Length: 196
Image (tube, rainbow, N blue to C red; front, side, top):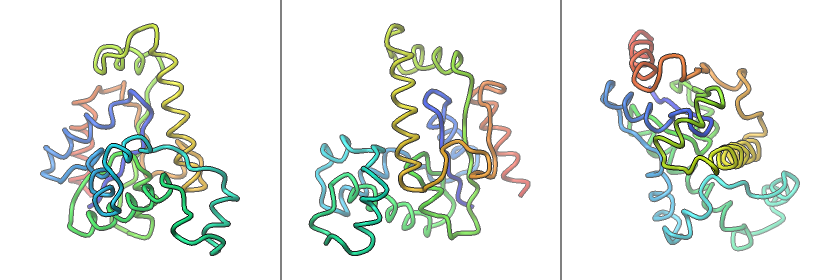
């Protein structure tokens, strides 16, 4: 089975994904996808990090590119990187059971029947506390960082999927991670996945 996580910033997507991968003995991919995509597309890794999960531009522009209005040399670097990540996700999924965090993996794998699409969320106060304590974000910058990161993820997701980020109908399961915490959420998810 393939598991994809879309997540609000601070809801614990990476930590839950790592713990779940350990419990299920699955491969785990988060930022690693970026390195694989950069290598496969000949984009320097440092440049790739600058464009990771960043929105590309207008939907009209994307349609223009997709219609053949531009050749590959004219496609912006951030769009090339995103497309390379989607291909890396598909290639990795073909190797068997794994977990993907972010990067529109649910969309990249939309034609596969063996994908469980999960959206992780939590109340703002809980997420703010986590990003200060776990990520080391200064308290005075926490709210601004949270809003900016969520907006960037929202814009990126909506650009590539033409779907609303966090909308329950786009996912098989949505989870408020504050209810059980990181370990509890991973443990309950493992039990659920084993029962499928």
